[in-house]
Length: 392
Image 1 (tube, rainbow, N blue to C red):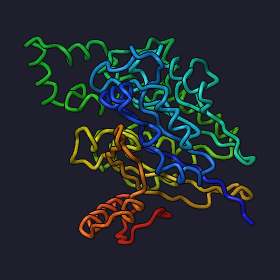
Image 2 (cartoon, one colour; image 1 turned 30 degrees about the horizontal axis):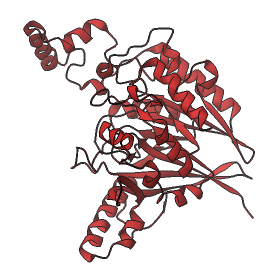
Image 3 (spheres, rainbow, N blue to C red; image 1 turned 60 degrees about the vertical axis):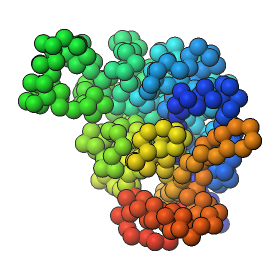
């Protein structure tokens, strides 16, 4: 009998300050949020989740402002209890609690005995090599930026190795940063001129900028080369893209093409907050964006019109005997707000399960239409039937 292992990747997992505050006041449950998805995770040999928030046990670290995240250890603990084995940490919110926040996050994950990759206090942690059924799986987590423009945290040259970056942090050039942020009328005029003439990328949003650095790219290539030489399979978890677009960004395609040329086995994208297609870049299977696995967006917070409450699980099946990838698949998930007598929670479940539990024919038809919409985006095919798992 052939032996297969199944590795599952989730979309972004993060919390708004409102949810953190509800949890601290005993009015929110992380454990309840994942009880529906636990059985699905149990079918996988290894589950990888993109944790788009620092962790801490210090209440003073929470609620630092809009789009500046920090979450309780219990958030990751509940994900771990639900079946998550590994957390990818390189993303644009990884420095929201500063460089000390990196240490706190790693300490939290070590406490719950979870694997992690993407952030490091020393060079030994810059990638993860996990042995599963005798196969060595390399997982590389990297990010386009660190929310520096918003959180104000720029790494020194000595600190840059703490985060697996794909380019310089946003507006790393101090002069351009000053022009971008200044309220003086002269600089406002300069900004308008630069934007109109498309100079210095002032026509782009901060998170869409190209902040190239050849030294960073050289280091990334060295890391992937090491993994290729020491692993049976290499999977890149790439945090890149724009915001809420179903069409992949130019920068994502550029960086994914680089990884494809380095012969990685698959690329798993996140950051866009909405589901994007699964396709090949050259010969590398690429899931461009898995969407929001855990997030208040589309559920209790804006935007409510981008379908941010949906995500997919991306599954990779590996034949242990032949050491080949036998197939890929995906599951469509939805988050819904639920309440009991004591508290509320955002429940994560298969869209397939939600459909089968629904009694209203009108709502069932609406679910079918949404399901068809996402299958079309992901595969390019018109498939009417709703399934728990779609094979590619």
